[in-house]
Image (cartoon, rainbow, N blue to C red; front, side):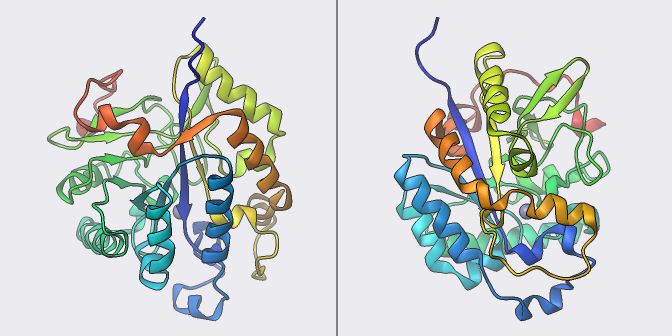
Length: 298
Ligand SMILES: [Zn+2]
């Protein structure tokens, strides 16, 4: 039996509560300035907890946030975290032309690098919006100079996902110079269950999340790749009117308990940034799989 615990990969998608895709029909982007900003307070709460628990993470951050809160980006770097790119203002790739996407990632990468003072190597699409219809995105991600992406959730979901994509990192882009690191799933029969954090982490009892990560680590010998959002840990955020019952459930569920749950997660497992955990693969090392599914030609 191995006694070396797996080091898992932790990420936070840094955006305002009013920028989430599920709110886009209620809150127009031209009204964002009317809503009180909470992202700095919410993210600092996580940074404090990560420091307390010796966890390091990748903060996939919007260029929009970097423009307004450069001190927050500086603190991420100072605390030893990795800054990644989450696009400029959370437009899903499915709502962009290829040219718009190219401009979006160039602008946001430059803003984040200005604030961070270091190169940005990782990208995550808003709402995991890489689908079979926009696989050109990987060529643009490669051309923009990113070395990895974490933009595919291999699950069935009404808003995102490529259910038959590989569950382990695989090479993407024309030159295969970008590594796609999918968010974690748990295999059950012929299906992938979401096991990567987000709303499911708040929905399920903590012991279920812990059992899924242990199974991914110990039975499958894989790293768990988790994602969270700063707004998931803030029960005091303003609540826009007119949201559907499903959106309210997904967004607000168990926010008051989420920070304690996160503290347990950070104590029960070891966490580092995507860039640290996958340094070998990102640097051109052998991948566990070539995908078995050539997404670039699909
Ligand atoms: Zn997001």
